Image (cartoon, rainbow over all chains, first blue to last red; front, top):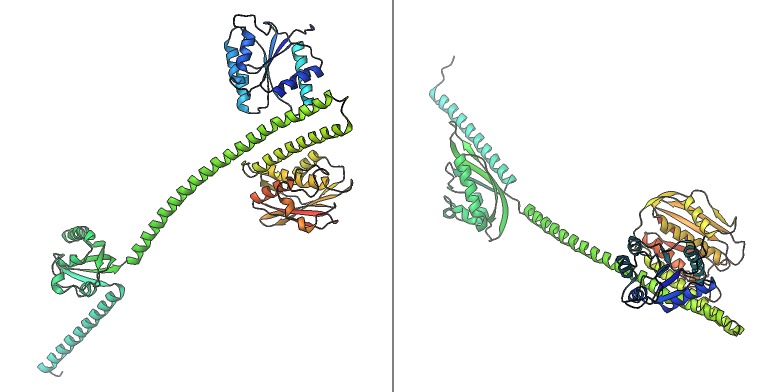
Amino acid sequence: MIENNMTNILLVEDDEVDVMNVQRAFKKNNIKNPLYIANNGLEALVMLRGNGNPPLVPPEQRIILLDLNMPKMNGIEFLRELRADPQLKLIPVIVLTTSNEDRDKVEAYNLNVAGYILKPVTFSSFVEAVATLNKYWTLSEIP
Amino acid sequence: MLPINKSDLSALAQQTQDESLKALQESEERYRSLVIAISEIVWTTDAEGRVDDMPSWRAYTGQNVEQVKGWSWIDAVHPEDRDRTAQVWNYAVLTKSPYSTEYRIRAADGSYRYFSTRGVPVLAADGSVREWVGICTDIHERIAAEAALKTRAEELTYITAVLAQTNAVLEKRNQELDQFAYVASHDLKAPLRAIANLSEWIEEDISDTLNPENRHQMNLLRGRVHRLEALIDGLLQYSRVGRVAIEAESVDVTDLLQEVLNSIAPPPDTVTIEPGMPTLITQRLPMFQVFSNLISNALKHHHSSDGKLNISVKDQGQFYEFAVADDGPGIASEYHEKIFGIFQTLQARDKAENTGIGLAIVKKIVDSLGGRIRLESQEGQGATFYFTWPK
């Protein structure tokens, strides 16, 4: 197992407190991976593509944590765009959402997400969930 | 042998003739009386269907002899029925077949009533028709009853259609409400979680500078957040009762009670289940909720840690009556109605964290299935909740 601290994590989330949730959970778990934040799908795409400039998120070893309910471009729409783009379609996506609707789950898995996690109610459970995710992207080889 | 003289012979002949005539008269009288007894109107026509006179018909319609002669009698038939009547009568006369139809006859006072008329040809010895005879019977009551029935049937169809439509509207309303309740609870809880998290982080980040009073306030804050969350969940649960259609299945109440106790996990030997628990076809989840709420209530409000609970059942024909009895602090009779209200608690929320919705949900479930719930209790003397459940 190669110790890999360089997985770049892009969090796509519009709620400020939910962003803080992730940041603090990272801190609690002593996770030092670079964490990039986009507030909606459009912003996320720009950060991944660069549009002429080098992309804000380094082009290798990228993982996306995706919220589903966002303004302008929601999670599912973003996912479609991602999978349609040959440069971006490889990126593993883990959905982090409050939505327990079957409809959303099916749609997400139709677009090949690597996981679908319901945001836990308490912060401490969230910390545990993030610890598990950390093990995953530390262990898993990502192109 | 004595000679029979001429006068004796003619006297005998006369006597025979007289006796025959009398017999004929009696026969005719009997026949007339019989006919009058069984019908309103009798009539005769010649072989070609023409009327000479119909006294019985005339007595009813008020027409005079000229007005019934030949075919004129048809004037007393209702204008709408005349064509059909003429057609049928002509056909019968032509084909020498029995005549049967219905039409309205105008009485002497001008009113119309429905009559059923039947006629048969009287055949001579050589098979030709000598005359027609017939009767008309009043069937007006029957026709009126049939018409009333038809109207009722049409009304029924209309009302059924309205009912079906109302049902559809209600279904839609229910779905909307359910959707609303889900969305409301879901969207209301999101900022709630954020408040809980933020207060935790603030407390963590400034823990060095936090004095005990502020720390206590932070705890109160978080307590209120959890309370709000519980209230929202309770409300959502309450709104769901009776609306989500659940399939009926075979439920062994002993098994179900075991499940309930497994999920509540009271201390051992606390709960006694009396024998005789039935197995019945019913909705499992609502029954689970009722027992679960009653049992956890009893345990939660008990004043000592070794309280005892007893669950029993009585067969009452169309219902079972279940009883959940405890030896806890009991409930004063002035509160027996109140406790079933939404969000009603008997203790201040700061003393015992309690949404006050458990019993409201129980009552709603029991009511929606056609049962009833009641409480027998006195302060200091435990409480028994009785509820009936349809078979």
